Image (cartoon, rainbow over all chains, first blue to last red; front, side, top):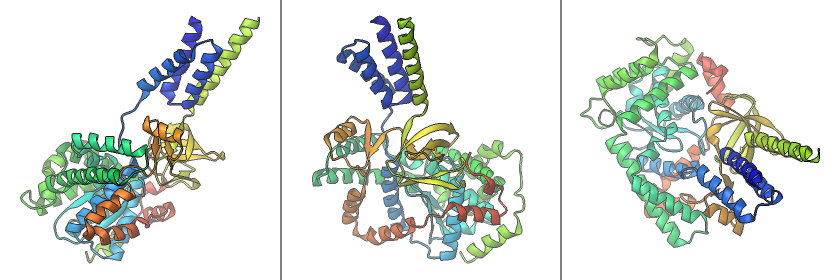
Length: 300
Length: 164
């Protein structure tokens, strides 16, 4: 009996590590064969399940709906720059870079848009809508420079910085509402409650992302992700450093946009320095790369 | 002798269970996810998996998992595309509802979803044309071949691989 209990515990423990329902079924089966009562077997399984339970979080589908509405709210303030060639180029470049990130796929993929403003700014919403301003694109002297900006934004998506900027209390309340709503058919009261949570979630992220800016730590992390993505894709990571110098000249901290919402470019450069293996200047890109960059973004 | 045989059977059974545990089952949590021939976003397409499809994970390598499909196809999928939880496309029956309530299962399309978005847009009618535009933009997902060609033409070494 004792030996049987030890065997059953061993099987249930393996089930916890594997997160595998099959093993819990095996524990049930083994329990009856080893002469344990069903309550003893259930206790073992419940203990295992409790130990292995993961923290709840938004699903990629939930994040996608948050990201879509955030993009819509941002585009209420900044109109879309309607330039087919430039947008096509940006999507080929951006979607290629995203493929090299640690989050190569999102619920409905990455999409890149240009905001029709002189302001130097960019936003990345959960789920993968990435918005870059004409002002920022005008600062870019090469494809490698544009790539460094887009890879930084992909980094914010990969690292869930948007979701992390939701206030703790709101996050818990939203997850509780989502959990309750998931188990039943939603009526108008449930939808109204969820919509309230949804609006609050959007407000929190908008305040952090658009008005205040992410934390210094989050920006440094996105820069580090950018360097990694650039290296994997074959772009010159020193382009990010050159781009930060350019932003320092063109977007002083007193101005709306990047200057106000991002840490001092000097601090950002010193943070990525160790990843750049001593590179000080950007290597010249092949002619074909520079030609297509100029052709696509010339008029921006 | 008989006792040894029982012990041997038990040990073999447990070994089989441990092997099965190594090959955990995961669910696709993206609307669509591509299973590729190599652990890279640029590998050729082996199969396409849909939201809630269950796949058996055979091996993990960085951001990629080697998986097999229900019909026996094997290939690589982005680790982030998979969830350890089962995903119910519709929670109509009692057992599924109980699993969703207990947190063992996730219900697709629940929570922040189309209905909530519709309610939100109803309260912010000026956003309607922007959402229509986003719907159009979302359809533009570049196939891996187009991305690989873009990288090739730009003389980018990454065209040979992908995220590892």
